[in-house]
Amino acid sequence: MKLLEINALTARYNAGDVLKGLDIEVSEGEIVALLGSNGAGKSTLLRCISGLVANVSGSIKFAGQELLGRKPESIVRMGVAHVPEGRRIFPGLTVRENIALGASNRRGVDRRGFAREVDEMFAFFPELKRLEHALGWKLSGGQLQMVAVARGLMAKPKLLLLDEPSLGLAPLIVQQVFRIVADIRARGVTVLLVEQNANMALSVADRGYVLETGSLLVSGPPSNLWNNAQVREAYLGGLAAAV
Amino acid sequence: MSLFLQLLFTGFGIGAIYAMVSLGFVLLIRAANVVNFAQGEFSMLGAYAMLILFAGLGVPYLLAFVLSVAVMAVFGMVFAGVAYWPLRHRGQLPVIISTIGASILLANAVLAAYGPSPQTLPGMFDNPGFEVGEVFMDSQYLLILAVAALLVLLQYLVFEKTMLGKKLQATSQDKEMASLLGIPVAVMVLITFAYSAAIGGIAGVLVAPILFVSTGLGSLISLKAFAANIIGGFGSIPGAILGGLALGIAETLGAAYISVPYKDAFGFAMLLIFLLLRPQGLFGERIAEKA
Image (cartoon, rainbow over all chains, first blue to last red; front, side):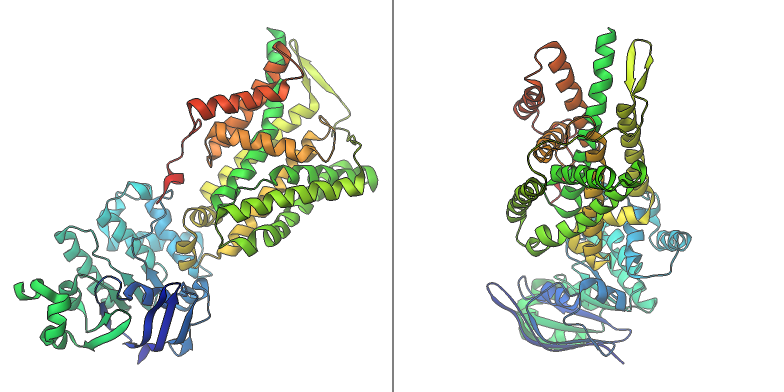
C-alpha cells in the first residue's frame, strides 16, 4: 500500500525553484533513501512534507490525505515525524524532557504513560539512560542524534523522515545509527531517509531516489543505482569503488 | 542602622515591583523573541482597570484586583494578535517598533479618556502596617513582597514541573522544532503574552497605592524593567528578579543618603555601570547564545 505519494511537487524559495515537479512514492514498511549532492533539494523535500515550506504546488498525499496546506502541528498529528537536519535538540531541556516532548502530537496520554514510554526509549537506546538528566547542549553529536531519533519515535509515527542522520558522526557511530534505522523499520515504521553517505543509505534501503538540482535523476532498488554509471560517478564516487 | 534596614525593606518592596514587570518582559523575550517596550503599559492599564472597577464601580477590593488581572490577561492576547502576530515573520526590529507604537497609543488613549491628573488608589489593607524592632513594615510593601514571592514560586513550578512549562520552554528555544513535534506554537505564544500582561497588571495594581496612577506610570516602569533586565542579564529569569531587586534597593538607598530628586538617576547610573563593566549582566545566559 502506498503510504506517501508525491506528485509534480514544486517548491520555490526567493531565489527560484528548489524542487521542479518531483514524483516520489513510499510504500508502507519500506526504507526509501533520497540521495543527491548538496543543494539537490533533499532537505527541502522533507520540509515540504512536514509543512515547513510555504511556497509549494503539486500534491503530497499521506495515507490518501493531502498534506499541502496543513500546518506542521497537524501533519505530525497524522503520523509523520520529522527528525530534521542538525538534530535540533532543545539546548536548555534535559534528555528526558526532550524525548518526552516528542509525544506532543498525541492526546490522551497521561504523565505516567509518557514516563513509561520514555523509559522504553532508554531501553532502545541504553546509552542515553545515564544522560537522562543532562541538558541538551552538553551532548556529543552521536548522543544528539540518538536523542533526536528517540524524540521522533515518541510521536509513534507511521512515517519517519530522517534528515542526514550520519552527518558529522564518527564511522563507528554511523554504523550504529544505520542499525537503528533498520531496527526502526522492524518496529513497523516506514522510513524516508535523506543521506549524503550513499553507501550506508543504500545498504539499508529498499529503494532509492537520486535528485539533482531539484529534479529526479534516477530511481530504483539499490542494485540499479549501484550499476548506474552516471550515479556512480556523481554520487557514489570513489567510495563505491572501495565497497 | 535602623534607617538602613528601613530603606532596605522599602527598596526590596519597590524592587519586587520592578522584578515582576521584568519577569514578564523576559518571558516574552524567551518565548516569542519579542522585546516588548509596552511592558510598563500593562502595569499602567492594570492600575487603571483597578481604578475603574474599585473606585468607579464599587467592586470589592480583592475581587476588583482579580478581575483587573483577568482583564489584563485577555488584553495580553489581544495585544499579541494586533502588535505581534502580523509581524512575527519580519524579525525583531519591526516588532520592537510596533510595541513602542502600542505603548505610545495606549498611554495617550488613557490620557484622552482620563485626563492628565494623577489618581490615587488606596492600599488593600486598612491597617497601615506594624513595627518590627525599629523597622516599620508597611502593609502594602509586605503584600508586594508576598505576591512577588508567590509568583516566582508559581512560575518555577509551572516551568520546571509541568509538561506545559516544558512546551513553553521548547517553544522559546526553537519554535520551528516545537511545531514539528506537534506543540501548538501559536497557543504557547498567546499563553506567554497573557501571563506577561497579567503579571504586569498585578505589579501595576500593587504599586498604584504607593505611586500615583497616571499615564506616565507605564513608561517609567518600562524603563526600570528594561534596566533591571540588563543588570540581571538579558533574557535571564533569575537575572530579572535579582536585577529588579538590586535596582529598587540602589534607588532607595541613593535617594535617602545622597539626593531625593536624583532617585531615578541612581538606577540608571547602575545600568550604565553595568553596560560599561559587565554588559552580559549578573547572569550571562548560555541558552541565549544558541545557534
